[in-house]
Length: 219
Ligand code: SF4
Image 1 (tube, rainbow, N blue to C red):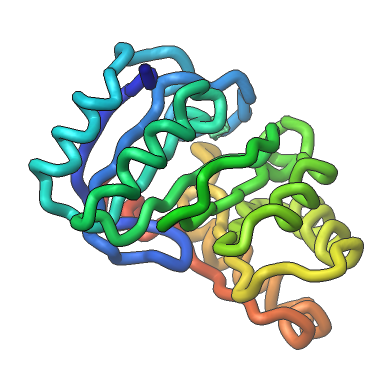
Image 2: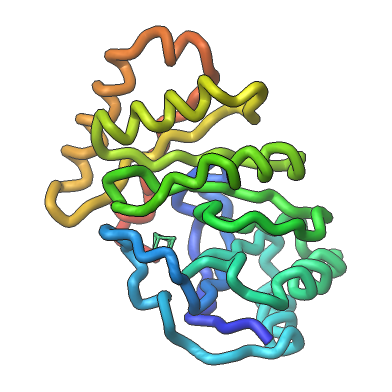
């Protein structure tokens, strides 16, 4: 069983797979408690779906890109079984799994594109330093997507990267959408913050990618 908050079709609005027409499975549990979470409705909602129910919806959609998001999908006990099942369908080209990285789990890797997106100090939760190192060691197809709003957030990210021997590139930097500032203003501010650090831009291959679906006004 997987607790599902909602299943919907949309374009991928963020990260390195931006623009891919996708079917999204949003799980319905999260215990992290980020201050500016934009999906608080997914913390404890929806109902339990059998793997068969989810598989049927995915197969009937005929969409090759599956995105499992949350909520926090890693809190779903039966997640490995779901990944095995979905990856066995010839229709499915890739399964993007989005996590904040607060807990490490070893999952089946077939067709898996794991996106680890740790939450910065602005979100008021612990930055998962040791867990991130475990993800980096275990997964091969891994995307690091850092959200950031303030100089403090940027410092924590730079510090983490400095301490890491090897990181998968390009590294995604995503301006964080918070209700206290217009998102377009946040994006401009965060872009100039990053540009003010030439050593950083020089050292890593980075992509500054805002949440495009927020601008379009879709999920
Ligand atoms: S981890 Fe994601 S879903 Fe959970 S509280 Fe944070 S932003 Fe919201």
